[in-house]
Length: 137
Image (tube, rainbow, N blue to C red; front, side):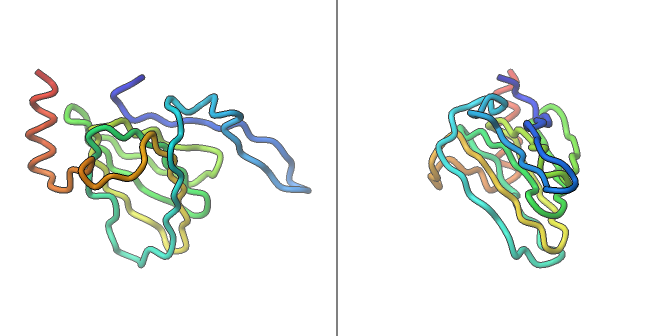
């Protein structure tokens, strides 16, 4: 398992005439057992989503429709990813701060390694930076 965000390319089948199906094919490309799936939609223009890190939860984020610009910070590196293909997901390890910029009409699907638990969330960036710096030691 990597402690750095990275793109995952899903198995894709189909053609222009019929359309396409993207699949994890028995979760082969997902580096964790999937416990929860949720989707985000109807995000108003200009609203910044994410703005948190998870202490233990790993995620794979997919822009099923539309585009998401994802800014990540794992405590060592800051990266920016653009998700605009439903056959590509972004792996987000635990202890990775994310800021999500949604284009209008975007529908995001997120696969997670844990069920939702508020105590897993770090919602203050300064607290995240402090915890991440201790982990780097």
